[in-house]
Length: 175
Image (tube, rainbow, N blue to C red; front, side):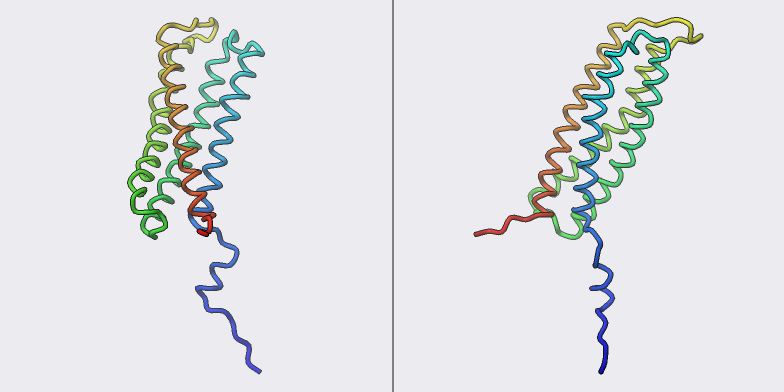
């Protein structure tokens, strides 16, 4: 009696997730984390009076700095995965360019948050000696409007990519 083992290519795929599945999980996590930060954490800090504290600007800079760097990492993985899916032919031909542009959009927004918006917002409200509270200016309101505008674009792109990757991951059988 002879035992037959599966070929190495068949064996290596057991228990592994595809690029589309991994990206879908990452995008869902990114969407969830963004919604928690925007709809739970920041309003909670505002309602508890942290905006009137002199330490708020520093805490916000650290909080957003960590989240922004995580977004850069997620954006890089998403962009890499989308390019991998494109090279595998998993994306439909008409949607390849749009999908890559959406991935680049997410990466660009994360980079803009990290290296432009967060430092600019912090520079407006951080006190040099740390003893006084700096009031919110018109410039800060403009930066916050930019943040929320980019946040709407980011959430829209995340939802569109989740929708596109869910059709790749879980195709509906044609009847």
